[in-house]
Image 1 (cartoon, rainbow, N blue to C red):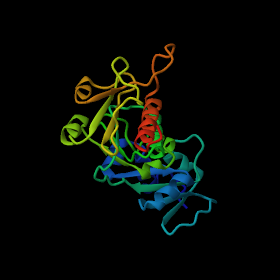
Image 2: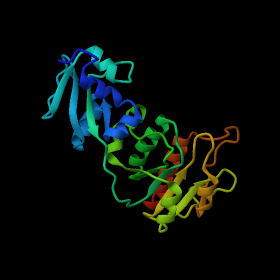
Image 3: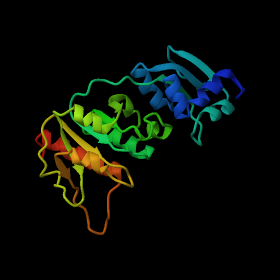
Length: 245
């Protein structure tokens, strides 16, 4: 059992709380039995970190650690019984509809958008380079394991749009937008763009979009949360292309 926080492995695991080390080693950490099981199911787990006294059966390299060590490597207030060191998920070729995120900074928003994307059958998420890190611990917890169900690509959104000209791009615009029910969605070549929580979409991206969307809301409410907006639009897209609207 590893009991010292000065242990070499413990120091390596602790570094994965920081993006620069996740990028350097191409690894990330998942916490909790549910997320670990999902990671194992998708074949990305390198090694397990198990709290002393906790039983978890798996044919993987396993390290048993003390509570002090587990507290050192986790960001949660209540320490988990198990963590796993994982390889970053490989990206795939983009096929089907897309949700694009223009500088989304809140990890809870990104996690929620990932969950909603899976729920509404959108399996491609394109993140701008300035968006929150996909492997941020709060993102991983809030997406409830759905990170393994989607294809997430971090890239320059403007370049992506210019390269993928066969898609119809939908901006979000309060003043000049159509209701989602009026929008001309096609079956598998739609891309909905959600802007930054405070600044909205960049003007450069908006100019590259062919249609604007607006979610009608009560006039006493100024705007919707980015994750809520994304979820509603993905729901409407899913319904429309499946003939439910």
